[in-house]
Length: 263
Image (tube, rainbow, N blue to C red; front, side, top):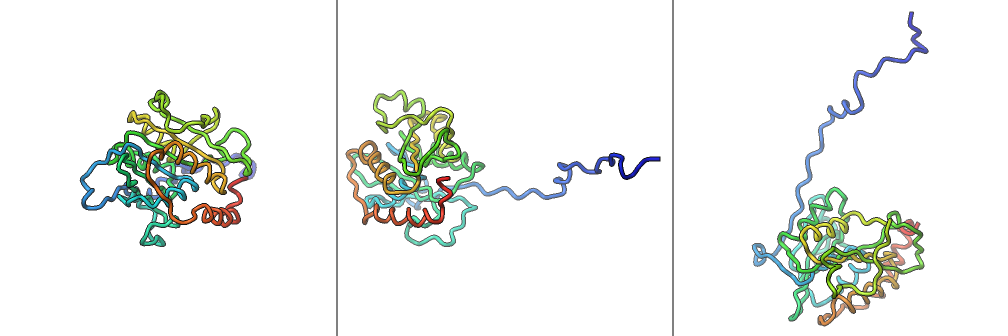
């Protein structure tokens, strides 16, 4: 007679993966899309340079460029509009696309102010580059993630690196000069990686610049220096207000609530 206490119990009638069959799969998310003014809705754009900003210092500096015109918006359906202001604000969860008003160069700017999950990165990258907007050159600005960096990052150290597509690296006139390449063994992921891969696939000259830390006036000055000296050379631009003071205040506020950023 079997010992019901010590004998191995019979297998369950259902495997764990079988139990998931009884749970309805969530409906697929709607695709992201671009919205332009009625005058530009059927128009394609071919800027000489397309700057896509995601890091805090690059967003803050480019937002305060006064010589820009709102051209369109990228809509990610899972990001609610509630809480956004009527006029573009750094507090909004949005992705506005601007044209920099300059007579000599055609420059577009995208300010990505909401998080994009890994699952959505490629669809967003495809939408931004190579369909409605076909740029000659792309600059992506993001922050270094400490979890992906091989080595120790000190919050008191301000650094920046770059990665380039093959076509950009072959160009003797590099868009960003004086930056080391991102160290081997470190990783770039998310939307920044998807955008760089998209540019490589479409044979577009592209540079990804990443900086550390994401907060503080020193990193703001570093990003501003890179943009002014290398990227916006010869472009007439102006900034609104004292953005460095604003950024210092923002860094202090976020530093108190996001201190784990530097751990």
